Structure formats: structure tokens, C-alpha cells
Image (tube, rainbow, N blue to C red; front, side, top):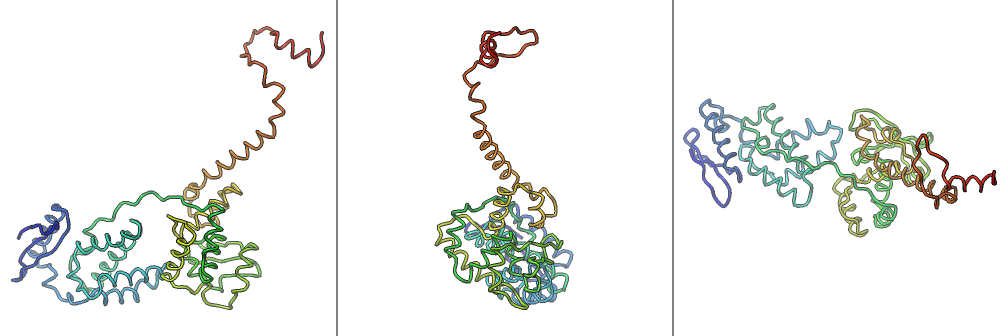
Length: 360
């Protein structure tokens, strides 16, 4: 058994049941040593996957089973299935026992070329879950390759929102198919998954309420339908079915094109929710109501918008300060005299009293 390096990648080599095996691990010698140690233990205990049945299943076959038995029951099923399909494009017809930690790291690197660390982590978590289900279903007996590679630490949630001028530019750049979705997001603060899962049965245009039963927090909530949203929904009204019949991948393509046309950068679809929340707070200063609309389970999640309320409170106080400026004008040229308990009446005070009451 040995560890060797080839083109910057550490590999491990070992014999298992009369066959020589080589596995690419990654750029870490320490990780390669750990995996090699595990392989030795597996072989010694007779648990190595080469000696077990079920190692002919392909990732494509497993992914289909996972979608049917597990993913379709999740609240965010549409988005999860889209990501599973993307994983199939990357891992496809590879046998489960041929998928290594190195391949998982390559997958992460490829995703991060165009997406964020958070997105790479979502794919990583799904892959890990798929292999865990495979072990439960006795389709795979080896070590889960997604558990060997660590999920990267994500940067703190940012707060990116559009100005009024940027909102106008984005809406003008939207295609006819995209416009209703973006406008709906801006007028409700709903998440993308909630919007795409929304059905007409949950939209009451008579009472002007959107009912959300499948939410991230697990708690149902109601969102009022105000005039602009009402005007948007009435021409689209149907008896049943999805409100927005647009696949996630199509939505992303149209959205990316609109961002490019509008010249807006560093702005994700989820940031439309931040835009709604930020402007709501700046206008109303009501964090409690915002928490209810967004469906936050705790006020701490809504507190991220508190500084925007404080900023506008300061602005409003500045307006009052400006309005009251003439009140203080008559005193602005007088020197300030510190007050002491036994202070005598000064010449300045005498002069001011004479102006107000006349000479004594």
C-alpha cells in the first residue's frame, strides 16, 4: 500500500481481494493518508466495497430512485430535482464505487466557477444525502465519498437590495415571461421556491390574500394582495394549477439576461426578497410586521434590516432639526456659559433679560 503524487494530485494504491486498486484523493497528503488507513481497515474487516454485491449501480440509476422515493416529497422538490439532474450531467453513468472524493472536489470546483460557495455546498449536501440513501437501500456499501471532502464555510449572509432606480431598470429589462415573476417577488418578498410552488387555489383575489402552506419554516402564513399585485394577478387568473408555469432553469436563463441588459451586477434572485424587505422597513420602520410577512421564525432573522430603519429615523430627525432651526436662531450668537449652583447673573444674561422685559 502506498501514497504517490501525480500531476499535483495524491493517489493511494493498495491490493484488495487479489486486485490492485488506485484512487485519486486530492491535493492533501494528510487526507490521502487518512483514506488509505480506512481502506486498510475495511479490507481487514472484510467490509471493502469490492467484496460486496450491489457495486454495479450507476449514479444515474441511483439519482432516479432518489428523485422518486425521496426528493419529490421535499418542500423544495423542484429546485432539488433540478440540482440532481445537474449532478447526473457531471457523474452520469459512473458506477457508485468509482466515484471518489477527488471527483466530489472537482464537482465543487466546477460549480464555483460560475456560482457561489453556498450553491456548491447545496449540491454537496444533496450528493451526500443521495449516497446515504444508497447505503440504506443496500445499493452501495462503500464509504460515502461526499463525507470525506469538507463542506466549505460560507461567508455571512449579505444584504444586497436594489434602489428605486435599479428596480425600474430591472423591470424594463424583463422579458414578458419573466416580468410577472420578478414583479410578484418584489411585491410580496416571497422566496423563489414559494413563488414557483404557488397554486391558484392558494390565491384569494376576492379577499386579496395569498395563502402559503408549504414554507421554509414549516409555518403557514398569509400575505396581503395590495393594488399593484392585484392588477398583476387579475389578467393571469386561472381556476387551478401553478400561478407561474416556468421551470427553474428557464427562469434563471431569463433572469440572467435581464440583469445583463439592465447593467445590474452581483444580484441574485433571492435578493429581490431583500429588496422588498429593505424598502418596507425604510418606509414603515415596522420590523414586527415584516417578520410576519417574511415568515421568519425568530425576530433575530428580521433584525438584519433594523439598521435601515435607524438610518431613515435619523433622516426624519434631520428634517425636524431643519424645520426647527429658526426657533434657535435668536440664541445662536450668544456664548454658552456653564451652569454652576452659585453663579451670579452675567452681563450677557442681563442684556438678554432687558431685551425680553425692558430695563428694571
